[in-house]
Length: 219
Length: 257
Image 1 (cartoon, rainbow over the protein chains, first blue to last red):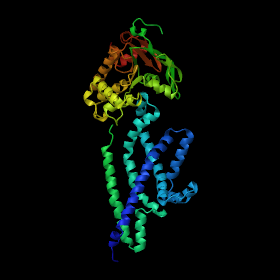
Image 2 (tube, rainbow over the protein chains, first blue to last red):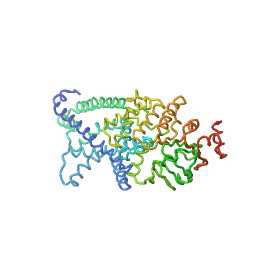
Image 3 (tube, rainbow over the protein chains, first blue to last red):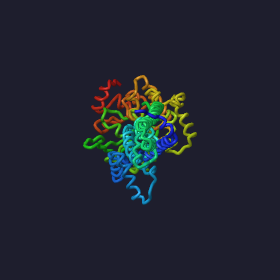
Image 4 (cartoon, each protein chain N blue to C red):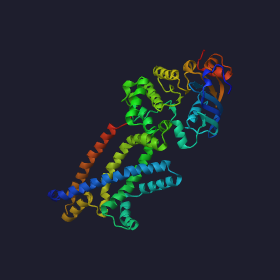
């Protein structure tokens, strides 16, 4: 079997654009899923009973469904619910955001719970409202504490974006598979895809480790 | 309560008045009808064995714990039960915790400036100026930019005192402020508290530091099993306690008068 690596180079523009889409999906998902995760976590911790139940139901549903199923679900169900056809990219983003928001909500909930009660009391003793105490005292500490978890979520997400290839979002996995199908260069394209994911993912993981050390809070 | 001739400051207005305060945690009766008043400019020390209810009374004072019976008046008004009313009242009471509870993500200056900024709505510059002045007052002018993790226990507790003072409270509540400290740093915290007392700050202090209570308090209340078993000027409590249980408690601490 002869290998022809030139196929990778020939499709460099398409692969580069697809890599861009993968990054875009990762960033956009986190931009949605971090604030939404905080909101869901706070609702689950401090909301009125029905709101709490709703937030808990959402988290437990989406945390325990396979992501690929959510992607398919979004593809077939979202157009019916919204009455308009969303682009594959928007659909994929919605599916990823639904899934990661549920995970982040659990992460934030654990982070908030890990801050001693005395911190909340010290803030309230100054006259802060519960919301102020959360925003100014509890959340900043919780965020720092869960940075490592968010980081590993980020790196998982970067790879999991490949799942939206099943609904033809032109991200890295989809484009690499397309090239493979057109050229029959299976081993070359899979290797190239692995190399791109790894080379991009590894520095992100390292960067996040560094951020974590930089902003660590010692007590 | 009858005016005690030895309680000179009791002529002033009552800042805090506890009437038959009852508090339960589940089946456990923690406070069993506590009546006590704290007058303007007084230092009232609450002493007694662990678990006798002193800290709980202090935590009821600013509504960190809710009462199950009786009443607490602050400056002539019943302690509100709603969030908004409680917040306004808490902003006029400073509280210092046994475990400091400084905000670890903020510098010493940030800790002290936080209340004025987010509760009083003060500008950042004004809040920082107030923080710098207060940290200087507690002897930490050179620690403005230090994070709590870089400070000793005594320094942290002094920052915590400055943080409470930044709200310009009418009364300061101290919950065993030196119990978590190394012996060598207890003195610096007590001396800051003594200075405050000398300046006329009204203070309620839960403490196991008997010599501090003896020296600084205007009034001492001895707790046992959720009740005040004896209260009076420090001279009476420490030199001539009238109640057997007070004598027992003090002799267990090795207090020799």
